Image 1 (tube, rainbow, N blue to C red):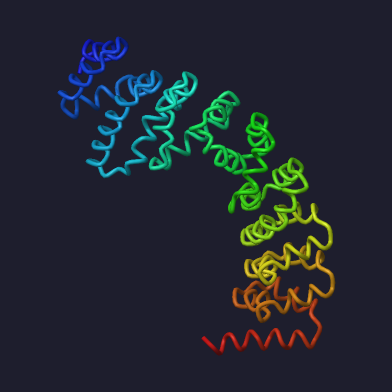
Image 2 (image 1 turned 135 degrees about the vertical axis):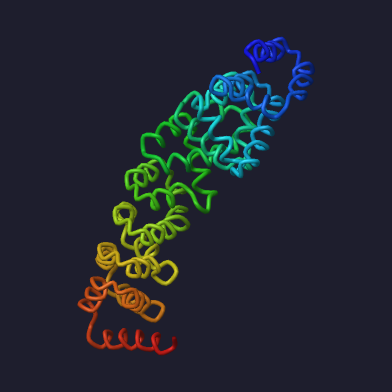
Length: 327
């Protein structure tokens, strides 16, 4: 396809002569279509997105998919290259020009990777965050934007929350099963944990203690994220610590021992009063000691033996032997 033919197709769209464009475009061979789409670093792909020509964009994507499938590419991945060729320029312009149907097209959850790229772009710009919040059909993105920001850093989270009413954050925290606190614990982000807590009302904080902190501690223990656990425990009173640490038969303690996270095992041990320490050791038939032994976590095994009275120590070792004999 030469430059004159390409410019003619663009002119047809600029003049709103979509039927003529579609007729000409449909008559092209696949190679000609792809030459048109790929020309000038995917200029037309982004141009039509910026104008809100969603129907034309859909036809282009069909061509990209068909071409990619012929080369055994993943369909979703095939869209990333043209999208990033101009740093998402078409999507950004569609947002700025309030072409909501085009924005929604890019955000289609069937396009997993492309969807995530678009969310990344949105949360990097307060103008885009505000545009999303003001559009009723895009408000479903709000929880995802907050969660996505928690995967990034505190600066990004503050940027998102600077635009949204604080009630929105509290709704997201209250309604989510895997939400901001779990994500921050997974990423070992104590600054995000502390900041989120400071933004929530006492009522929501009670929900966090009951619903999110127990699971967040387990997530952090599974990933040996000591700082996240320290941040959570620092926010709690003595009774609250017992409440969250005893969750699911002291599973935070058990997972920490299982993973060989000695610093977390010690941290939890010191946070628990004497009576709960014995319960934690005994939990699920001495699970912490059994798993640490089976997984050859020598430092954790040595520590648990050093803090356990002789009578309990014998029972712990018997539990290990019983487990081995059953295999």
